[in-house]
Length: 60
View 1 (tube, rainbow, N blue to C red):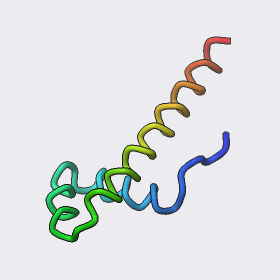
View 2 (cartoon, helix red, strand yellow):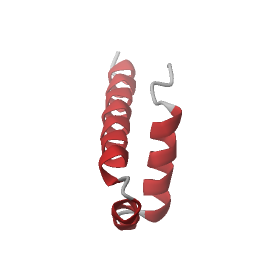
View 3 (tube, rainbow, N blue to C red):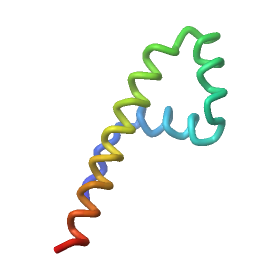
């Protein structure tokens, strides 16, 4: 299965997984909230799609 996430998406996802919702406050303070939230949303969609593909392969 191909890795669909960009390096930036991996970095933002890592921040979120390490610190949870607290990153949003930091991102607001840094002025990066909008860009990083978009990257996190994009990463989440890609991960959900990958999970869906994995599930569908298991049903065959």
